[in-house]
Image (cartoon, rainbow, N blue to C red; front, side):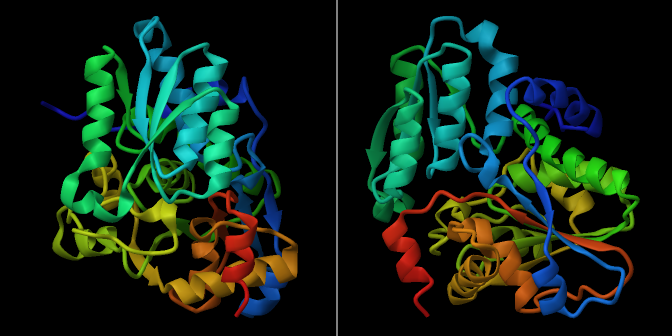
Length: 334
């Protein structure tokens, strides 16, 4: 079957859907990062902080776009989805908005704040043992069984054209703000896991700032995209590992891969300790309490993982800020 690959027109069509429900996440200039990175005068560094959405991550955009396109066909049937936590709260919020039932499959070790936030929007949550999932396949099996037994509709957190289009609205927001301030863009650094966030943003950034370098960032223990780029086809990891719980997909989605291949110039890795240092840096300099997945793009910049020389501004994505206080305190105690 021919895949329907998301286009920039799909992203633009998703924008009014998203705007019905919440305001754009802020794009904030970081004077501290400009100084830390030693950029030339006139260049700026911006943080696109999705911690300000109603679910404290970018996942709400894709979830709302998916729900808007499926609401009528879903009818009274439930929605089933698996998630490490951020898509869980995103699809729960979307289901609440569209008056649908949603059942989420989450790992047993997900942060408590992600469980609490997801349930606060009315979702039912079931858990699987994450430590053995690479052997048992429990996550996918449970989600599929829920959909089959209850005649439900299964939603993917990243491998879906509507999810990609919705996430891409954030990229349009970046473009619009930079254009409004007559800024150019030289580098865009963004997290990659299944590829839903980056694929959507890459469509927007790549079409509006075609000379900008679009750089993916992954944990060192979960670099399926980097390995995929190296061999020219999707690589599946047996057991990805990192403190970045939101970046542990086994492989890049088939809908995401063609877009990523076209627009993303290269991918870099950050070790967990480097991500922890970035979390501490963001807290010390901006007062932001980020989850590890949210801070990894900043980690790549702070550690010089990619050459940021050139002309134009740099945009770094903070993808989410759902982290338990005790875990956060431990991670930044370095």
